[in-house]
Image 1 (cartoon, rainbow, N blue to C red):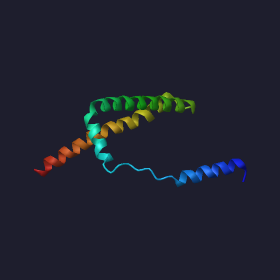
Image 2 (image 1 turned 135 degrees about the vertical axis):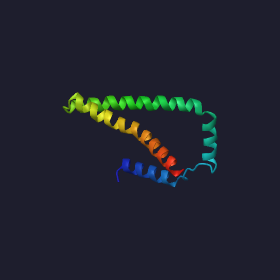
Image 3 (image 1 turned 45 degrees about the vertical axis):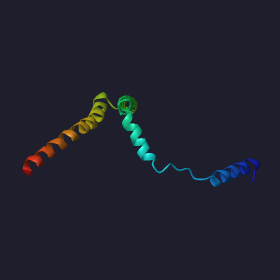
Image 4 (image 1 turned 180 degrees about the vertical axis):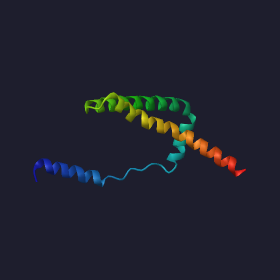
Length: 105
């Protein structure tokens, strides 16, 4: 082996010999307690992050599709179509649940 390969081999053997890291047994409970305490700021940041991600994704998708030669009408349909489905699913679920609940009486 070359000297560089020997060093990489030594580093890998050293890394594999290290103990496996693990979390404490009550980690999930402690994490949930902490999240409940500070849920208001997390919710705000989560919404900001999700909104930013969505906007960047829409713009990036539109630019890529336009670069492939699609016209703006097709791009609008491909972006707004899935958004309409995502918006319609909770509405349909509520309508189905209400219908089932009324029929159960």
